[in-house]
Length: 157
Image 1 (cartoon, rainbow, N blue to C red):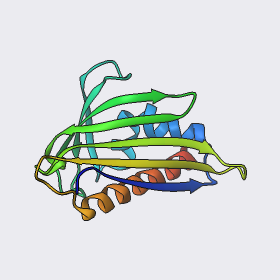
Image 2: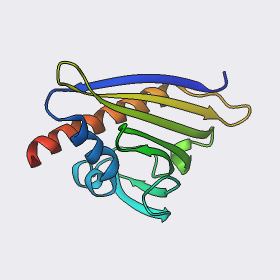
Image 3: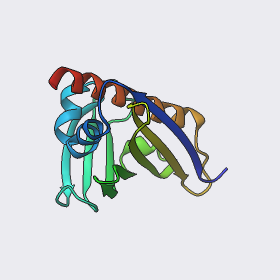
């Protein structure tokens, strides 16, 4: 099967693209454990200063089957509103995946909606397969995060 790539998109008329980008990516360490503690129990800086190359360890809450994820920030452009992280460790990789990359692009649509486009790239370990259920769960968790950020922005702005 090899590398598997999937795309997804979410839209909101309840927040601006800049609000989404700031809350979901720039302020992730503070915002996610606060608004989704059942998913993100804690975020710990392992290496770096928060910019490209930074490595973080996420401890999951009870709503997630895995307990940890180690991710590396490989691209962040606040002006273009792009963000790419790669999961490089933790039991979230289930012993079958080498890495999972999440590339996000946040845009404003012509109708004024905030749009986030997500590309997920799963790279299996040699001799392993990528589970479709894993991909579906990953995208579902991304949607859940998006809509929680939307609620948070509405409540705080």
